[in-house]
Image (cartoon, rainbow, N blue to C red; front, side):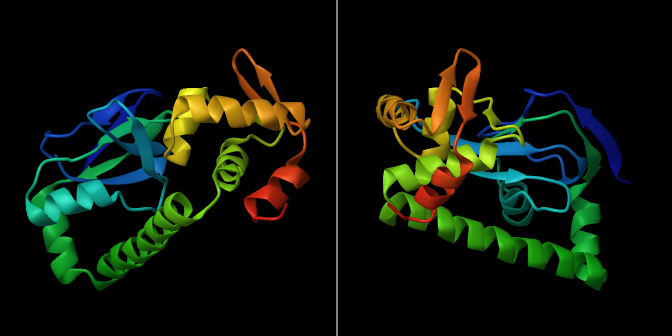
Length: 196
């Protein structure tokens, strides 16, 4: 029987080495899934929102493994946890459920492919502009630290700081004590598309 769950913003939902209690179906909220290396450097792998699949959880359930990454509630969450046995039964007998899961996996694979392409083949300013646009609210506020942006762009914090300073000098963003404000969405979109 599925169990309802709620979580507060900032709550750690799972960490490397922990067993998986079941398959998470979000009703509302966002989970950030990331890896942290031995050096302490963090890389954001993906986010889970309502209707999406957490590949970490899926891998744990299918391969009977512990988590290999960390999941943190970026916002308040609500949803249900489908126990392992119920998840496996649904995958085996419920075609609509199975198709929804497989479709979500295909979408996640596309996101991973884009992440690899961005990190390996894309100019850093493109990655930084994409991250700022992705994290910005409608009014342009990005509630992220330089450390957060380093994790979003798979880079070092010092490099983010240097490139953000250049974005500030060009008048594209403004640095504030509690985050960043996008001043020129159009220019950031151009940069994110690789246009100079």
